[in-house]
Image (cartoon, rainbow, N blue to C red; front, side):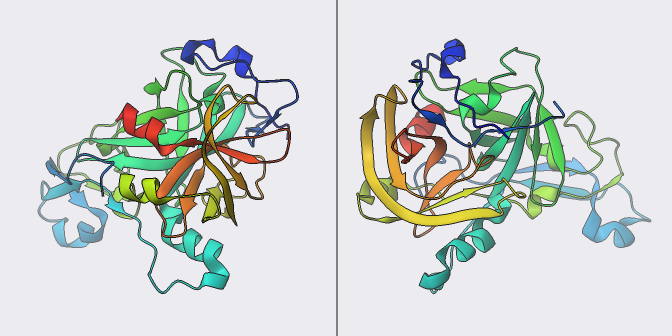
Length: 292
């Protein structure tokens, strides 16, 4: 696996050229090729039966299944301080995804959801080889369920991107994001997935010296996590040509596009690189808030 950071090729989103001395974070080459969310959970009626009620509804196809926004992931208040990374994996693993885009494989985060749409946050450079409007990106969730999308939103001047999925794409046997047939018995995978906690108040409280947790999908969806310390909460980096957060953490190829959490499980930023000094950089949450 090669670490990649060829920012000079990412002109479409206006990222500054990366210094040659800067290590690219964590994009793995695949040889096979509170305040922030803004919307309350809603529901949409779909005339299908949920998998949990397959037997019950077998004689009555057309039973209405409520399609709802994904719930938020929460970390227990009594989580073991000596196993903070493990607690984060157990609480937030279902909010993590793997992103495959052309030759690259990285991580992603279920950032937001309502009754019609799910937004996946990742690092823009993970999508380096799929800049075309119709280029496909696959998103794999914790249970192995995979959805393909072509809809991508980039943040100008920052290493941030959002992938847009129809909420109905999380229904098993859904065809092109639409329920396959009235009365079909489908499983709503979204009932098991979670979106990350987003709080501008928590972000504003974060300061240098605080505990942070990096989480990504190198070994499997949400299976890589490490605990470290925030070094800078918001600083301009010549290495990345943008404002970033810097942390003392251990990261691995494939974690690019993953999450930087605070100790309470709030999303603070998206992992995007490693500086020439070995500091892990994350694109701040503020960039995502501006996109949604």
